[in-house]
Image 1 (cartoon, rainbow, N blue to C red):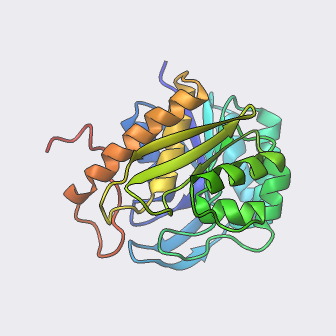
Image 2 (cartoon, rainbow, N blue to C red):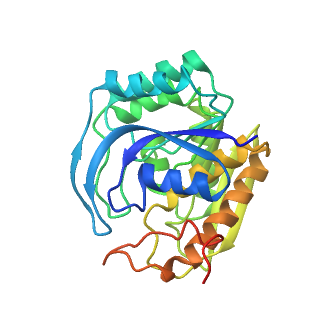
Length: 267
């Protein structure tokens, strides 16, 4: 049976990140994608110029409409622009208890623009950490969530992951893309064990939406029955392929998108 996956996230009109990236990823990996929008952004590959945030009650109404009618096999959470929306999302998910929840705590866009209001971090820690199967912060997001300095090496990634686990997260994947070096290193803390994931760094400027894409791919593979570590490895393989093929796209003049359909579209 084809898995149904719900993305709860903001939109990106340029198509590289947010809801648009999530739906592309679900489709590319053989899943049926659904979306509850938490914010409308005015952005492109160069940056974010505006954010419109709907009332938290309307975000909840979108989620409730899905669960009232459709089997949901996994949920991916992205941009949550206010603590009220965090609370509304948490209330819905606590009530419906989907089997898998992947939380990508989007706080800053690839361009460096802030995407979260004050209070969002505390609300995430209190309400969403205990519900999530996995949280997937990048290095700056992990440091902000943990209230700790940014890591400068892989051991630092592991310490941040352990700190976030201690704050209530069941499993934490801290992404080390912001570190330097020929290899891209990530650290998973789950069940008291640290697992490192390493892949050759892809030389490309097409990095818009990488975090959204990875977390969505993990959710897709969890819904398809893979265990957590296997789902992460499969998702990283998919993202690496999408990064390597990104230069086949000609989208914008800033950080372009990854190629979500690299496996499916002929050269």
